[in-house]
Length: 149
Image (cartoon, rainbow, N blue to C red; front, side, top):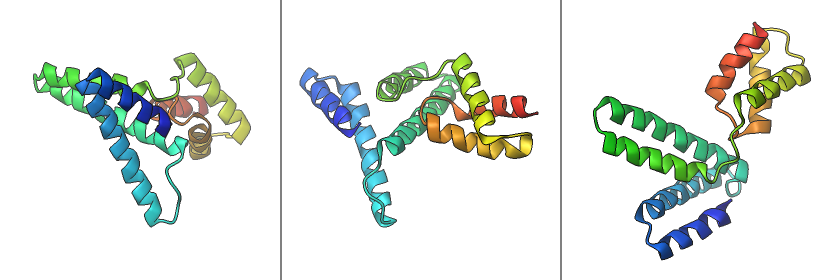
């Protein structure tokens, strides 16, 4: 995934696409920060799964910012945040549809043997391991709660 981001940055630099260059550099900086944090704990460089989680977090932050800019009557800043979201999402795994999310949750419930709301943590852990970056776990937790309840 790192190589893909590096190659995209080179291409954006050659094309002089300033907004794309800025977003890609920000992504690289976040990955390097994660590498440095991992080094402090004795881990190696960030894995693709960790990078995917990091990108998902960046998307969530930008969605929140865009919403705040919309509420603050700053549509140009909200549009900039949404443009960054599209660039970041281009490096993430394909997002699952609502139907696919529900099937994945049902599969996780069956594989963990979850019987009630007290088993929600087991189901969410199984989903995070298998579908990192492919679904919104905030929405998924509501579906898990509904199916277990």
